[in-house]
Image (tube, rainbow, N blue to C red; front, side, top):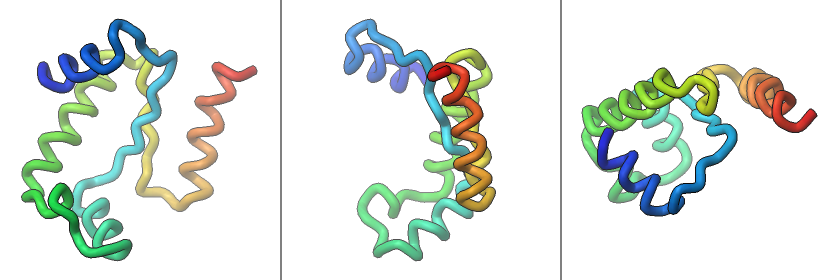
Length: 94
């Protein structure tokens, strides 16, 4: 988790978004979706455990900063995902 935080700080140079929308999906489902889209690239060819670790770090970050991070259940259909995103965006746009 430290390396993700370090990279974020390095890239953003002290700036931080008001909201981060995290589209969460079980790794196995995400890999199935990616396989339907195209042949796996170098990144997508990583072991499932790698993706589980990445997912867990982001979910941990979201749990530690619930004001900034909005976790969206991306296992729903597209309309359900859009509705969740719209709900969160309304809070900062209205």
